[in-house]
Image (tube, rainbow, N blue to C red; front, side):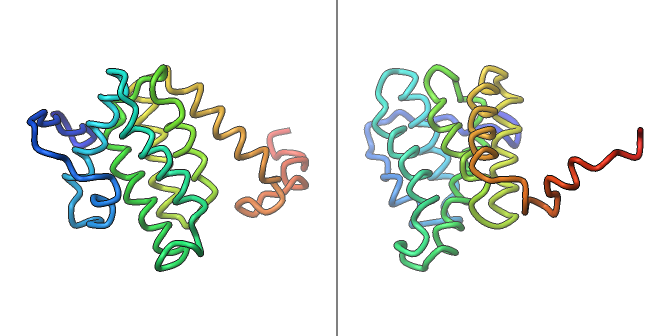
Length: 171
């Protein structure tokens, strides 16, 4: 346990934890269950059991491309992804580059999918992840560079190549 960015400690009792799907269906009304699932998944990955971790990575990747296929359409998929990323940003102290690079890359790859709320959640995840463990910087930057390579600067935030090539006022 810890501050506001800390993931809760996991109760390692014999009771069955809900699946990721069950927790996500409950949505924002059950954040503690999602945090417990994520903490367990990240810790078990470090211990050599990547089953729950693989579900989390697949879910992040699936939500990015779900859009029309998901019940509720793109808005529902985006809301679900944002909820997951917001919870993950509270678990960044658990991330280890040797075990969790795929998740870091998958989450940061969502930076061009969706509205400002999702972008803010991805940004918070990236900042918290790198702040908690500087070793995560490499996979985070790799994912960002890959996303920038996919999307030319032409329409990003009104800054096109012409703007970037214009002489600066400092010259």
